[in-house]
Amino acid sequence: MGDEKRLNKSAYGDGTTWGTEADVNAASAGIRPLNPGVPTPNRPVLERSEITNAHEAGLDTANVDASDFPLDFIYKYDGLENKPLAQVFGTAPAPAPLFVVTTANQKIDFVDAGSATQVATVAAGSYNGTTLATAIAAAMNAVSGVTGTFACAWSSSTNKFTISETAGPTNFELLWNTGTNKATDISTLCGYDDAADDTGAATYTGDSACTGSGAYQHTLTAADDIDGIFGTYATEKGTKVFVVPSWKPFKFSLTVDSGMIKLSINGRGDQVINDSAVVTDLDSVTYPDDTTAARAKLSQAVFRMNDQTGDALDSDDTINPKTFNLEYERPMENEHVASSATIPEPRGNGKPKCKLSMEFRRVDAVNELYFADWDAATEKKLDLNITGPVIIGTHAYLLQFVLPRLILEKVDMPDGEVIPIKIDARAVVAESAPTGMTVYLTPIGGTVINTRSTALID
Image 1 (cartoon, rainbow, N blue to C red):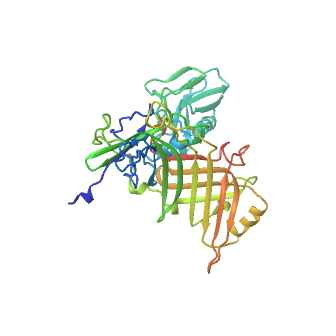
Image 2: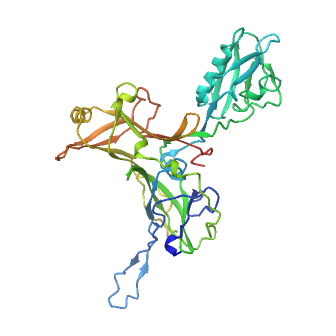
């Protein structure tokens, strides 16, 4: 088999000190760009003005140019490309676990007064922390004969549930250990230790942070700046490992490539080396679970758009572009300073820009109105939901972007046998959350649901 069949590895990980490579030769550090060999080093040669003959004896080398390059991906919900995507946003806290309740984990044995044991049954279904807390309280309050009133709260900071008796008896008991339904109770799912009952109090908080049922929701929020957020990128070229010690993602674009969703991340690196003492090989690199079934497709994408002041987005607001390009960029400086041949960490150099273009295959009753919207300066809101295979319960892989305030900049109806229509829009900051949307006081917000249990920005 020839060398043309050899599959090179690439790896990526969080950086700590600008200009110093992190050890990305590690498990789950594997990243699968379509163009892994893109880093290109460049050190310009300067011709000094006093050179007057053909010998060029006075040539000098300049500073090392910044290594700007994109990494392109066919987007995978569990792929490591989610890390540099999150770094462009700048804020991606620890993910929220998602829960599935079945007949195997839906019971709560408890005592609210006296010695009689009550049994609550939480409705089977798929939940996040907040909705499961509501379901737990509803199940306990629905038990016939209960004299107290119960509440349940979810903490997104600790990933713990707290069950309380808010009215009635002064305390109650949760029979995690001695209850007759111990084998099918909800204790483990909700982080309660079933080695002993919880007794003698009116409030009980889970003993450990919940890990959920195997699906996790990551929230991407645009930070004011992305200072200190960068990574190390390494890729094999033949027998050598080329390393960009510090690479700062500052732009992403999402588009369509042969029916698949293509994600491109642009970043700025300090230099390219092939003699790293830290990343000497990539033998330990493994990849996240990013199998073919978890690739994102255009057929999985649903666009919904209506007036910015309109009601919550629903199925009646679905639009169907044949292609699109969503782009978010944070302009970055590219300056050299004294005492270093390479650039220091780039800083923001202007307002972030977010643009969306969509092309529809033909004019129809819906999109022909975009010209009137443009003429009247009618602002829009939009969400894009790309939903993949089910992970567990009804929790499915998801890549979602929310644009709470869109301004139509251009509407184009070019000539043709079938008249297509194209629109260009700019996303800007919304002063308040539109109806039905979470508060995103930024041009764009994002959500990823996958099986990664750790934060995308460590």
